[in-house]
Image 1 (cartoon, rainbow, N blue to C red):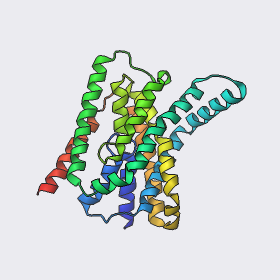
Image 2: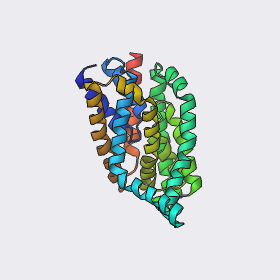
Image 3: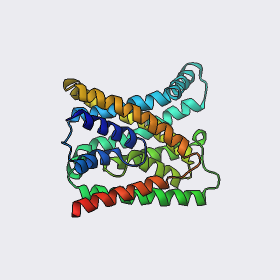
Image 4: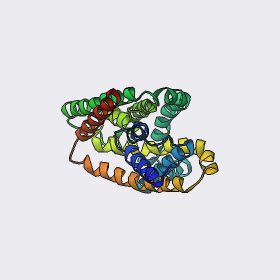
Length: 267
């Protein structure tokens, strides 16, 4: 693998992990479109480690507050939003993590070679995100904000991320869609999605971390740094973008990319 390929894939992972466009699909489609060699498991772990650095960099203060809330509950018997949200995140992480762990290798081996199916999944999810967001905007005049999220809402959002094992669906895409369909505001969907991604990315990285250490090299370092930098940029971009705009641009992008891939497959 050349250094330029490491940089490009790091950018793809950093942006795709946090925007609702599916990083897993992009890490398959970009090499397919540009003729890159297949990257190793170690490099894949390095990219996820980079995005873990990104989400912790942006939200480390939030996680410190959550842990402090749990401590105050255990030691001082003091109830708080932070204690509640910590356990909501723990509970929401469990179903997606279990389903993902059970089916990840099976689904990945099947879908990695089915480029047209990945393209169709990109397009279908793009339409669902667009329609779901518009429907929620029409039916929920007073959406649920981050501090008002319920256990039911967070659990269903967490369960929905299991669909992310299918390349093209996207973890952030499925969780944002699930949240919007339950009347959660765009800002709350995005922030909870990012907070929820932390334990999932951490767990996925930790399980395969030894493979990264065994094959550690310059390409992996570049992948980590690039994914981290562009992960931070994409998180901050989305949080600011959705304050005034909807998710339509991501739906259009998905449809355009799907069309490009299908045209290449056909011709």
